Image (tube, rainbow, N blue to C red; front, side, top):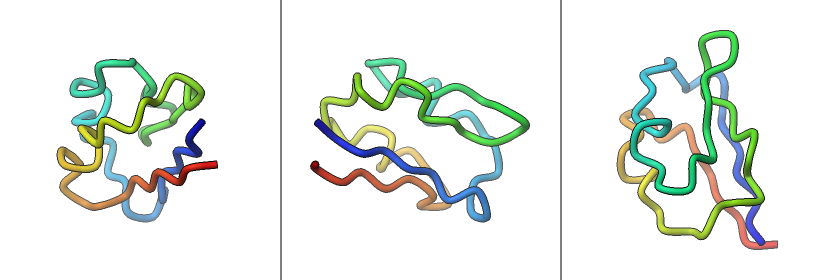
Length: 61
């Protein structure tokens, strides 16, 4: 299982992670990325490579 977090100060709501994630972990809430289905993360790292602001962190639990 992985802990997916988004630094709201870095996130600009560009939706790159929402569009790129094959597991549909993210949605945009109040203009920021929200990893509302973090339990679905398989650590493919697609979101990490797509985020232009390095706002996403994934930690193995």
